[in-house]
Image 1 (cartoon, helix red, strand yellow):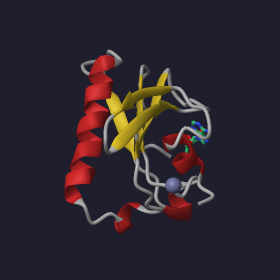
Image 2: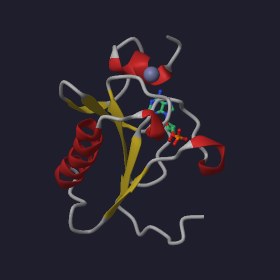
Image 3: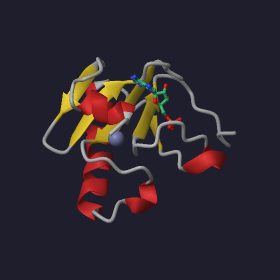
Image 4: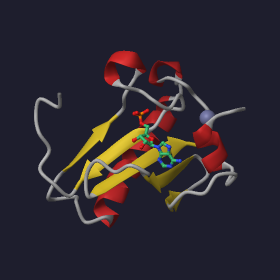
Length: 111
Ligand code: AMP
Ligand code: ZN
């Protein structure tokens, strides 16, 4: 399948992998929007958030994001999780991923 994140999962494209278990990986975003910008990506390919029926996997992705936030030292200063879905949200890669953003003050509303 011609999916950039599947290729990253399969090590066919290089990435800065900072986390891996049997279900998900965590990589540094190539175009960081904050001092800490990590992507939590399920190994299984889903294009859209609403296509994931596996609530255990969804929960795990959030749990892993929080564990990475702790590892990156932003647990208490604060962090934001974002999942962009479809055009209005600006989803540019059609393989579900959580953005973990931190290391600076986040604006609200997010724009
Ligand atoms: P989204 O726009 O929510 O779909 O997020 C896609 C994210 O993937 C963007 O923040 C990109 O900077 C990031 N991205 C795209 N290609 C790569 C790559 N090869 N390695 C790491 N991050 C990437
Ligand atoms: Zn994929």
